[in-house]
Length: 243
Image (cartoon, rainbow, N blue to C red; front, top):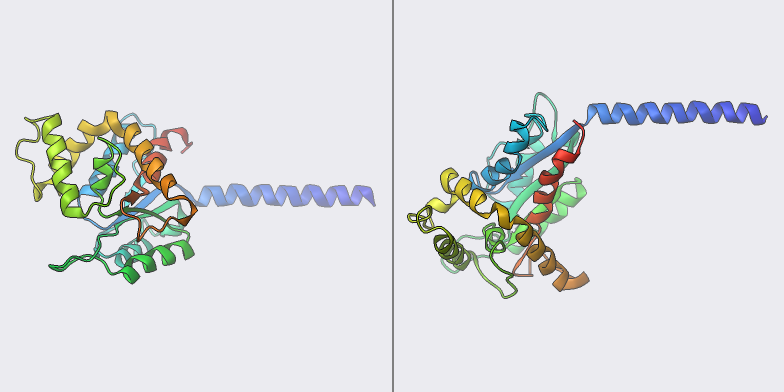
């Protein structure tokens, strides 16, 4: 009896091991991201992994940016879920992320309604998709490279602060930087390069900011706050994975 049980256990262990190997083989050990903005955020994340690709530490498909069709939180999630890479869907990627702004509604129009933002967070969770959000806007991530920020700040003020600090840091490089071109490819690459050495500071500031809200943290309500650092850390750690 004991022998038969041992043989059954061995077969089960072999089957479980095979299933795990099969699942690992079928899943792409990489990241797929869908972003609310079409240029700046995707460019920034691509810059993180560019050197890893050049050094052949990771494959060219380790980071995939989903086709951009929407600029609303729920629309960004739809972009991720509808994207296919060589016939493979978002579920077959190891890490699945959307990058969205809280972007509180403004008096002169624009912004996202509360239900739109919260609905995207809820739907993403139900589909096992992680969310890198910024309250109020993506550029808060840039601002945290310079100093902690604990008081509320809206997107227009964030842009002004970031532009001011970048010009102070590198007057020549950012001489012509303004609210329009800051989201372009050229200046996004400049910003990444200029702030790279301060990235650990930004990660620390973002973590401390989230911890300050405690268990009652509400992404839609808590301004400022962001989880962009979590996605940045995952991309930075791709080099530690085996592809």
